[in-house]
Image 1 (cartoon, helix red, strand yellow):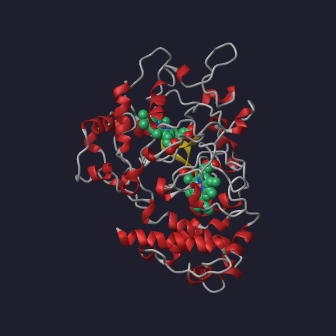
Image 2 (cartoon, protein in one colour; image 1 turned 120 degrees about the horizontal axis):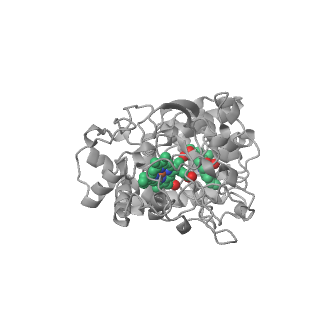
Length: 438
Ligand code: HEC
Ligand code: HEC
C-alpha cells in the first residue's frame, strides 16, 4: 500500500515537473512509469500516453482521459459547468452530447445496415448497427480518434499534422519510433498509426474487465441478493422489463452468441440464457428512438428550433443505407449504450437528461402512463410528449415495444418496488476497478 502510494506520489511529482516545463524532460516518458504500465506492450503504452496527453489540445490541458476518466469507468465531462455536456479545451465552449463510457466499446461492429429480427414481429428487417459515437458516425475505434482531436468543441487541433507534430516534439516520441519505426513522423500515415495505438489501447483488457458481481454470478462464484435476482428476472422478462431485447449482445471478436437465445417472440427461458460473461455486453449496438426529455441545461436548447436528431442527421447516411430506406424514420435514433458500469454515475442518455439512474428506469415504465412527470408543458398547459424532437418526427418514438407500449392511464409494467429491483440489478454490473465509485 505504502509502496503504491509512493509510486502515485512520484507520478504526480513527475507530471507536475513535465507540465511546468515541457521543454525539459527529466522523465523518460517512453518507458513505463508505474507497475501497471510495465505490464503494457509498447504499442499499448503508446496508446495510453496519447490517451492521457494534456498537450494534445488547443490550448493545452484537455486529454481523452479528461472526458473518459478511468476513475469513473471512462466517462466524464472535464469538470464541466453543465454536467450533461463536457467542457472543451477553450473556456465557455462545450460539447453537445453526453460523453459515454468507452468500456466494452471495442466490441461495437463497424457501422452498417444489417439484418436483424424485429423484436415485436420476429420478422427479419434491415436496421442500422454499430459504429462509434451516439450516431455511429465513426465506423470503428481507429477512425473515431480523429473526432475529438480535431473537434473545435473538444480538443480543437487545427489538423492531423498539428497533432503529429506535437507527439513528435513531445516526451514519448521515442516510444512512437520504437513501435512504428524510426521514420514514423515522416510517414504520410503517421496520424493513422498513432490513432491505431489509441484504438489498440481502448481494445485492451482493461477496457473489458468482465469483473462485475453479475459476471461472478454467471460463473457460479457468487449469489445475487433477492432484490438483485428479482431485478434480473424483470430485466429479461419479455412482458415486464424486456430490457434484454436491446441491452443484449454477444461479443463480436470473441463471439459467443447473444445472451438471449430464446426466439424474439417467445418467453425468455432462464435456462437458455448464456452463462458466458462475454455474451452479456448489455447492448446489441442497434439504434432506437427512446424519446428522451429535452435537457434545457444545454445552451443550444434555448433555441426552440434546435434539435439533436441523432442518426438521421448524419450527412453520409444516404450512401450507407439501402436505396429505398426511409432515413427520416431514424430521426431521434441513438445507439443503445452498454449498461455495464452504468451505476458508476450519470448523467444519462445522449443528452444527459437524467442525473439519477432510478429516474432513467422509472422513465421507461411511466413515459407513456404519466408523461407529465417527464415532459414540459406547452403554453396552454398540455404535456408536450417527446419534447426533444420536432413534432414531425415524434411518431418515430418507439411506443410498440415492452416496456413502453402502455397508454396514458394504464398501469405501468413495473411497480416502484420492481423499479428499485431493476436498479439493484444494474448495480451488479459495476466492474471491480470502479466499485468504490458507484
Ligand atoms: C471534451 C470531452 C471529450 C474528449 C476530450 C474526448 N471525448 Fe470521446 N466522447 C466525448 C463525447 C461527448 C462523446 C459522444 C459524442 C457523440 O456521440 O457525438 C464521445 C465518444 C467517444 C467514443 C465513442 C463511444 C461510444 O459509445 O460510441 C470513443 C471511443 C471516444 N469518445 C474516445 C475518445 C478518445 C480516444 C479521445 C481522445 C483522442 C476522446 N474520446 C476525447 C467526449 C470527449
Ligand atoms: C427498444 C430498445 C430498448 C429497450 C427495450 C431498452 N432500452 Fe435502455 N436504451 C436504449 C437506447 C437507444 C438508449 C439510449 C437512448 C438515448 O440516449 O437517447 C438506452 C439507454 C439506457 C440507459 C442509459 C444509459 C446511459 O449510459 O446513458 C439505461 C440505464 C437503460 N437504457 C436501461 C434500460 C432498462 C433498465 C431497460 C428495461 C426496463 C431498457 N433500458 C430497455 C434502448 C432500449
